Image (tube, rainbow, N blue to C red; front, side):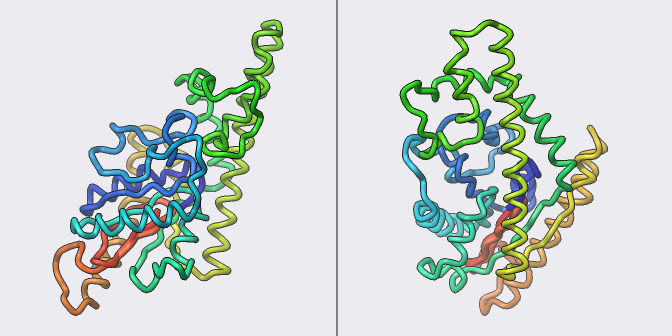
Length: 296
């Protein structure tokens, strides 16, 4: 869990290099096939060979509901633990994670121990990063990627991948680009890009608020990791800050979680996966015992 852009995907992969793990995507837009630039999906290169589930696999024209996520993620968790790997659930869609963990129909709490990691970044610092990321998305071909999703006869942006930030924001640009002069066209483009920036920053604030509710109202135990220093540095200094403030503390939290779970298990084992543990995090990944899950 964590605000968009905070580094959840990176942390999950980094943790998977420390603990034998597989990753389950819980981002409600990244589950859909397509729009890899707009939805900021982690690339194959960035995945570093770590298996990812529910990432870019669903029909983009059909809603993938929280019920769909719960059913499919539980199946993935079961198969991952049978392979003696740690399930790491990663994504910013806290509603999916809340449904999985707290809905009595899924009996998640009675089946799994889970560890939640939250990568937090000061909002003003994150805002600046998000705005630069949107500019980079534009340079990477965002407009051409969005173009096939524009339908002049359909202004419904409430279903499937069309809900993604970026699709509705470009409706006016695509609708008018061929009937206006170049100056107006550039203005429409700038307005669409700026609207994406504003809406993405607003999304980050909503995600922060939901995490606070889970932590303070629903009393979830969530380990907060302040990644702000990482975003205030560049190059090797940023990498060092990431290891110091995010990766190393996360790995220690997960190692302790797994050790405690294995110690309390009647058939304790040195294997990372032996009971059923799940790590749920707002920016992390952790292996589990037979009933262990990490949420990032």
